[in-house]
Every structure is written in C-alpha cells, then in structure tokens.
Length: 217
Image (cartoon, rainbow, N blue to C red; front, side, top):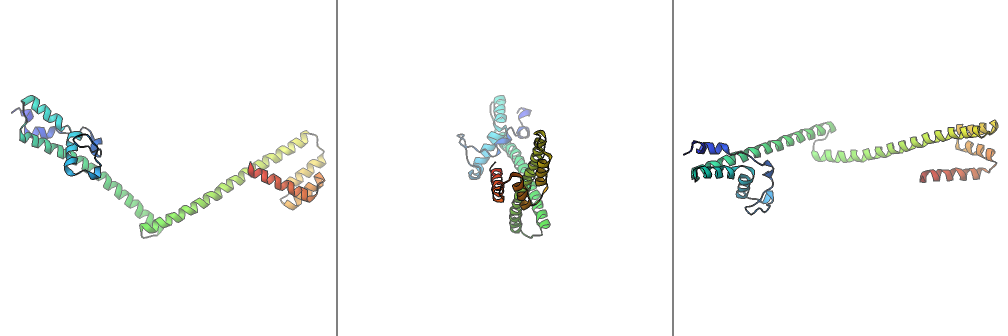
C-alpha cells in the first residue's frame, strides 16, 4: 500500500473547505432542507460532502491506487466527523459566551434597577421608555421655543435698524423700543394702540393673527 494512503494519513488529510455550509443543508439531489427539520444522516451526509474535502481525498486515493479499501473509507468518514464536530464546538462556544455575556448584562441591569426578575426589569424599562419619550417632547418644545426667541431677537434688531435707516423720528423709535422692552402683554397692547392710533381690541386681533401665522409657518 502506498504510504501516503495509509488509514491514519487519510484521516489527517480531511479538512474543512467551506464552513459556510454549516446551516445551508441540502439533500443528495441538491434540494434545500430546513436545518431544524434535517435528521442526523441528512446533516452528516451534507457536511462531509459539502463542508469537507472528503470526496476529493477519496477520489485522489482511488486515482493513485485504483481502489479504496473499506478501512480507508472508514478513516475518511472519521476524519470528516472530527472536522465537523470541531466546527460545531466552535459555534457552540460562541453561543455559550454570548449567552453568558447577555446574562451578565441582564444581571447587572436588574441589580442597578433594584428588581429581582427579568419580567420586573421589562416593566421598568417600559416605564422608563415612556418617560424618556415625554422628556424628548419637552426638550423638543424647549428647542422650538429657543428658536422662536432667537428669531424674535434678530427681528427686533432688524426693525430698529430699518426705523433708523428710514429716518423715523426718535420719538417713534423710542416708542417701538419701549414696546420691545416690556414683558407685559397688556402694556405692550396699550403702547401699540398709542403708537398706531388703533383700539386695544384691534391690536389684540393683530397679535393673535401674528401668533396663528407663526404657528403655521
């Protein structure tokens, strides 16, 4: 017998050629089989023929010596099984490590939250989620208000500049500045009626109209 084809050598020559086939199970006709529905024989036949170089090694033996003994084929099967089990082991280790990591994270969260069960933690997180959404809405409102305040300040300064450039009297400019300076809505309306010679009700309608327009923009 060719020394290169002794049983142990054949066993050692078997190696993984395509690990991506681990979950893409196919039968002998090439039809896909759901992983959770495939039986042990279907899984092993797929793995040794698709994942390993099992067929190539036996073909090489047959080409060189003209035949393959039962012992040689058995060793090739054993080598394929060993290689496949190593892939399964590595996958299983990943699953265990991932599970342990998630379990530790969950345990830490439960400890920090002061709850004793995953269900209680879930309920607490739901509550926090609702509160976070409320906070986000408030922050959004505050940002919107800040934008309006910034816009108002810019508009105020631009109005003052236009009044000066247009040669408006200092008396009128002072009245406008007074309106901008007051924090009282009622007082601003009184100043507006004096400045424009309008009734307070008309000024109020003007203010309401401006507010509605601002909201729609």
